[in-house]
Length: 144
Image 1 (cartoon, rainbow, N blue to C red):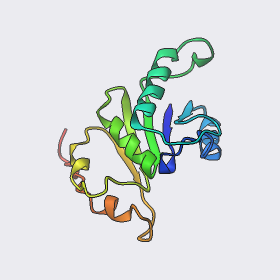
Image 2 (image 1 turned 90 degrees about the vertical axis):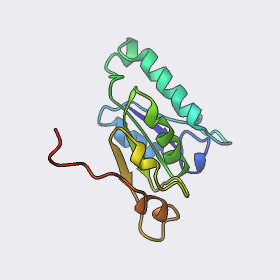
Image 3 (image 1 turned 60 degrees about the vertical axis):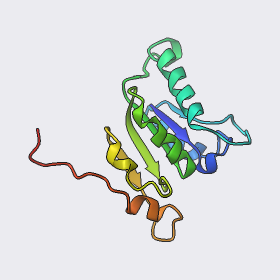
C-alpha cells in the first residue's frame, strides 16, 4: 500500500493520478492526500489519517487483499516532508522521499530506523542540496 503526499502539499488528490494509477495497476492500494480536484494544502496528519483508514479497512470487503503490514509512505517535494513525518509510525515499513529534503536539518536522516528511498533530481533541483548533503549512516556490512 502507498500513501502519497503531493508536491507543494497541494490539496488536489488527482495531481499525481497517472503515477499512482500506474502503481495501482500492479496491485497496490494508492491513497493520495487531498480530494480529487481539491485545493488548499495537505498536512502530514492527513497522510496519517490515510494510514488510519487503510489499516481499518485492510482485509475486509473490497479491501480484502490489502496488506496493512506493508505501508510505503512517500511523496514529492513537500509531500516528501509529509512522508518523512511518518517515519516514526510503527505501521509504516518504508519511506519514499522524491525531490525533497528537510531544508537545513542535515542530520534527521541519521535518526530514521526504517528503509528510506531517496530519489533526487540533478543539481538544478531546489531540494538537491537538502538530500545530497544529509548525513545518512552507512550500513555496516559485517553487522548481523
